[in-house]
Image (cartoon, rainbow, N blue to C red; front, side, top):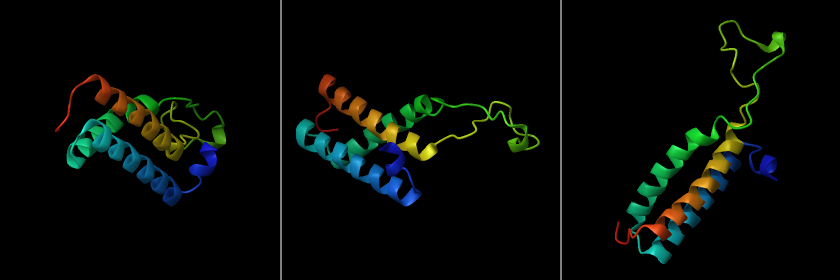
Length: 108
């Protein structure tokens, strides 16, 4: 299913936009955050978790014919960035809502 959601950049961006809107709407309605505060906090959580998700399931390029001169030997063969953007959005949404439930941030 994730592969079909990440089949193209416009589809991926649409999925991410809908998910972010849902998380921000939940934060505004359930935890009494302002829209701007919810977007700002979500952005910080998303950007932080992106760097945790990026290295997951990366395999270096092992086919000598596909290695470009000067390429780092540990560069991933298939980084799957669109899938990782969706996963980051989901994981960040869960972390965001958990943080809002744990910390009293109403009115942010």
